[in-house]
Length: 306
Image (cartoon, rainbow, N blue to C red; front, side):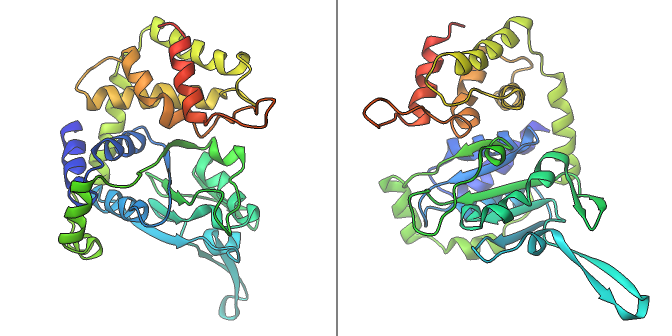
C-alpha cells in the first residue's frame, strides 16, 4: 500500500515541480489521518497542490473560497422550509465531502473559522440540534496567506492545533520555474489527472501504520520534546497532548514511507518543524523582536538529547 503513496507523490510531482519534500510531507500528513495547512504568498501553487493531492488519492472533494462575508452555514449547510413536507429540510453544505479545500482560510472571519472546529476534531457537524457524521475519510486541506497581508484574520490557536501539519512551498528554483514557464498550464493538467489510489487503499495504508513499532525510549524522546516546549521559556504556550500525539503519528507515517517498520529519532526530527512550528508562539524578547517559531523549534531539537 505504501508503494501506492509513492506513486501518488510521483504524479503530484509532475504538477508541482521542484517541491518533492513538501509533497512527501503533505502525503505523510494525510496518511497519518491529519488535516493540512499550506501557508505562503499567493501564486506559488498552494491550491494546485491541494487539488492534485485530492484527485490523485481518488477522494471526493469540494473547494470553498473563504472570504470575509462567508458564513458558517455556507460551509456546513442550512435548513430550509419545505412546504410540501410542512417542515424544515437540511441541505448539506460543501463540508460533506472527503476533502474540503478551504482556500485562503484566513480571509474568513473568526466566526466562520470556528465553524470548522467540530468537523476537524470529531468528523461531524451539528446543525439545528442534529449531529451528522462526515464521510470517511475526511480531510481539510487549507491554504492561507501570510498574516501581514491585507484582509486576513489570524487563525486562533485552537484551530491551528487541529491542523496536524503546516507547510510552506516557497518560490521555485530556476529550473522548476523554467519548467512552469515553458510547460503546460497546470489547471489543464489537473483536468486529465487520474486517480493513482482509491479511498479503500488509503484506508488500508492508514491501518498498516498501527503496525509501525515505537519503542518506549522513542516515546520518552517525544515526551521530552513536548516537556521542553512547556518549560524552556521560549514559547508562550507549550505543545498540547494533541500535538505530541500528532508528532508521534506523523513520525510513524514518515517511517513507513521510508520503508521501515519502526520509528527512529530521525523520523521524529523530520516531522518536528511541520508538526510543531505552527502550534508554538514565540515569546518576544525585551527589544520587542522574536525569532520565528521554525528557528526556535530547530533550536529545541538541538537542545533535547536523544
